[in-house]
Amino acid sequence: MKKNEIYNLDIIDCGSNFEGISKYEGIVTFIPGAIIGENVNAKVIKVTSSYAILKLEKILKESKYRVKTFCDVGNVCGGCQATNIEYDFQLIQKKNMVKVSLDKQKVEYEKINNTFGMGMPYYYRNKVQYPVREINGKNIIGFYRKNSHDIVENKCCYIQNRVIDILAKNIFDELIKLKFNGYNEKNGSGDIRHIVIRRGYHTEEIMIIVVVNNKKLLDDLRFNQFVINIVKNNTNISSIFLNLNDMNTNVILGDKLKKIYGKDYISDFIGDYEFYISPKSFFQVNTIQAEVLYNVLKTELCLDKTDILFDLYSGVGTIGIFLSQYVNKVYGIEIEQSAVEMANLNIKKNNVKNAEYIAGSVEDKIEEFKKRNINPDVIVVDPPRKGLDDKSIKYIIDFAPKKIGYVSCNYSTMSRDLKKLSDIYSVKSITPVDMFPHTSHVECVAVMTLKNNI
Ligand SMILES: C[S@@+](CC[C@H](N)C(=O)[O-])C[C@H]1O[C@@H](n2cnc3c(N)ncnc32)[C@H](O)[C@@H]1O
Image (cartoon, rainbow, N blue to C red; front, side, top):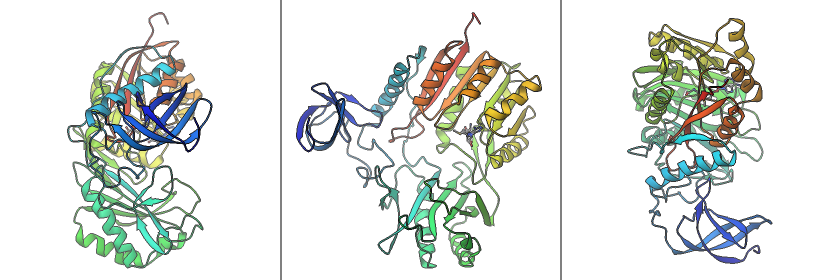
């Protein structure tokens, strides 16, 4: 293959980012935008001895899975990868992506279930995070363009909750009226870096976080007027925070928070339980599917009323509290101090008498349980995208619980970790849950049991 030349290709597979895959003289080619079953003309952008990346030029034969994209910026925005692929087929492909990853790591498993999808896979995100930028003297709000830090302006995002999507644009207009500027990524100047909004799906409570670029802005009096203007038009706003992020980083929130209106937290329900959520605590972005996810975990784990359960990487205690009625006792560990404060409030709020949450990293704190002679029957882990570190895996193997529930938003690191545990654990089931329709992401629940001969 030669760079800049156009090739005619049959799309025979789907990649982990929903890109079309073809083969040409032994070279695997990736063509974003092309769909399995299509015949396309595509131009080579990059070529190595084993693979090539091509730009889709023309579709000569369309896939039966192709649909008209519902999004005005579906082809340029980096948020979604599959707005032009039939939803049922997305679910089949997500299961395949998980399978390919397990096979790559040579993980053996008894069964992989079909992906649990959504009935109405739109407007599902309960949290928006919009970058605000000043580019060539113009302030804009939008999403990052695919593979870049350019901003794509967008009037409506079909995967965000509609109320907070519209509110984000109103907040942006208010801030600009008050003469704040967007952040300039090139020279680090400007006032506002991000507008973050969370909304309780069931409670409809709203929390706003305005991320500012320098310390002085935390005391800027214009924010008094901002609060008045925003609250007067939106009755469901429970809480407004300023957050300082003056670092040269892609991370959205900095450490320092200042509350300028309302309560310290909002709440939402998962199943029968109500959970308080603070600005910096993790909460699943798709509340409906979070309930599906936790029910899958409950069903596949087959818990016993005598079980001691560890809820590791516990956030605000959602999994442990959700499962608390099926076990004897829950112990949780979470690194974010404010999330642990919420978990302890959540225990009280839900009248859960058999759960305890401690703050710290799993790798440092899990030993405490050993010292206290607390031995789990079941360990549930729900780590961040990078998965488990070797120290935590060693502790888990040392505890040798009879079951492990592995919840993951990254099937690659999950597959790697399942392999590491496979000497003494068998994988009973894997269940993908579509927490993020129209994107290439998928959540997974894996359940492992201790091998008999151990
Ligand atoms: C994917 S979230 C899961 C939270 C929770 N289980 C839920 O379902 O809402 C991962 C959590 O792990 C926490 N975390 C990250 N690294 C950690 C570590 N080394 N030890 C303990 N918690 C950690 C994060 O703060 C976050 O709350």
